Image (cartoon, rainbow, N blue to C red):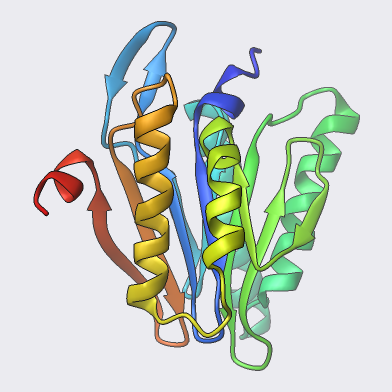
Length: 209
């Protein structure tokens, strides 16, 4: 399998005191063709946990459904769900087992969550099943262009509106400087009240100014 989708697709995440915000491009390509530009790669696997995933569609669907169904099964058996840290350990084990068995899911992952005790959470995991907790994180070529922006503007006290504006700055830079046409970015925010879908960021977002 080619790893180009891991580079060409983009994930952005930022963790603040009261929420974690995550964004992903919505472009689905096959070879040199754009198949669709509204592909949702921000998947809600629990009430307060969202996985942002880069990779091929088959791996994304198989991996995220397996994780989500097992989390639901655990909750049904034990009458309570796993927190964000336990979920990232579980997803890491699934990915690591696939690598050892010779049937890997080649995916890059950002996980945004909110725990009642620990608060907002953001984890970054690569296709080799290495993960880290971070205040902000990216995947893909577009993400590399965004790191300096996130580093410059990040503050844990950002409001949801301010964090969304920072994500917009990142998307604007990606669309202006990257050779790929990543036209639409979906954005979701995870708070103590659950998952909220924010307006899609696209070229009209900036032209309307």
